[in-house]
Amino acid sequence: MTTWVFEGTVLPSGDTTRLTFGATTDGEPLPGRYAVPGLVDSHCHLTLAATPDGPVPRGEDFAAERLTELAEAGVSALRDVGGNRDVTLRLARSADDGRPLVLAAGRFLAPAGVYFPRAYEPVAPEDLLAAVEAEIADGATWLKLVGDFPEVGPDGPIRGSKISPTYDLDLVAAMLELAHSRNARVAAHVNTDHVTGLIQAGIDSVEHGTALTEQDLEVLGARGGAWTPTLCASVSPSPDETPEQRARREERSAYLASILPLAERYGVRVLTGSDVVGTVAGEIDMLVKHGLSVEQAITAASTGAQEYLGLSGAGNLVTYDADPREHPGVLAQPAAVVLNHRRIA
Image (cartoon, rainbow, N blue to C red; front, side, top):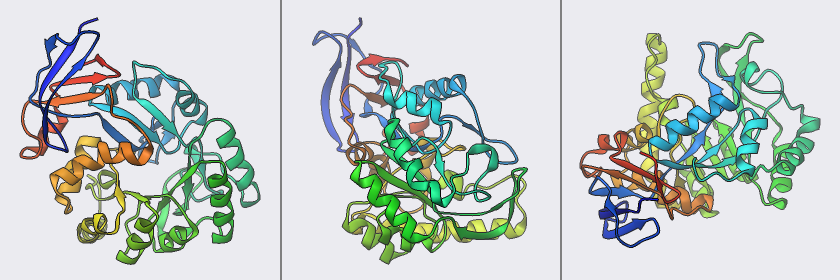
């Protein structure tokens, strides 16, 4: 097997170093003068395909294609936060040097009528704790709680803009206690001020979080929590949006630009997530446009996520011809990708 050698600057630390990947100390030079020790997609859906009526689940072949795309983009690890549990939990239980490492939450945890109907099997409140036990027993290290959501019709489309909580907070607290006792953590989809109660109840990671306040960040950061803003999903324009929808999106974008820079002050770990519609490179670009420095955004997509998720960047590298700190757009065009000590691109 060919040994590959990188000599250049590793980000986000900015250290200049020489790294080898292979059995010998000498080998072929990797293209690129700048590198990151593997990207992390912390909010991914390997088995969901986007449709006009909302996401729909797909199978093993679809997930395999997504994993190949992610690997070629430099993603060495991902956290799947909901989808076809039979596929994602099996991927999480198995190791394969030829693909990114998968952490999986399994199924979406939401009652009937408050999530995209084709994407999940509803969990009634009285069944929530048993569902948590089942996901953890099958290998879930994370759980995905749908904390709030608009009403959704049986055919798929969202009905109206009103967003309501899904489960009673006392039940959520019991769920969190159970999950934490089994060494699992909980990521919560939430886009209203219900986020305050969920944080106080003990959720580990806020997903989307478009209504987070400075006080929420202070509480979340005090216990080392995380926030995955998924800006590609939250504030990207839609080709058929109405003027009213555009105004709400622009207002949401401006608010996030005001609150995101406060996360580091309070110790909240910002993470990058592609959701169903974005990319890690695109999310880094959006984080920079919403107030983070390039170094902070790259940290969110690499070493910061690895540390938070308990992963190692060893054996992984994605290189670039230009300095991403000066040209963030280069992150979408890797010069080379090393995954688990092997060059794959």
